Amino acid sequence: MPIQTRYFFTASMDVDADKEALFNEVYDDEHVPYLLEVDGVVAVTRVTNEDFKVNIGGELKEVSLEGEPKYTAIYEVESPDVLTSSGWAEAVERGRWASEVRPYTSNRRHAFKKVMG
Image (cartoon, rainbow, N blue to C red):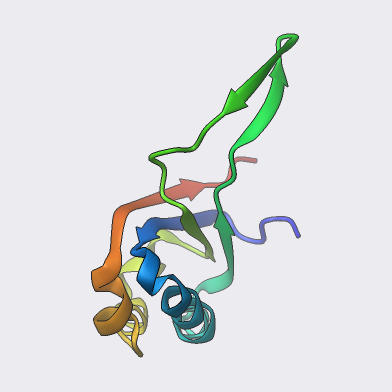
């Protein structure tokens, strides 16, 4: 599905191995649904990293993503203001995420992008 908005926010991170099942359960069943209730959040897509090969300039290159966060959530949002809204602030603290999952995440990275064209 093509990107539906002019902006997207990404949250990438690793999680302690012994908390991985809880991380995925809470992210899918609580965290994403709560954020989808926020005005201006249009869609959320979760992805994981995979090493890959690519042919560039006639050369096959192997790319390792070692050191990069394993998990990324891509939030399609209507404007930059969504991330500073009270709705967003409340949603990111709801449920088990803040107390039972966030403390076990690391290598966290956030980015905000504007879609060109």
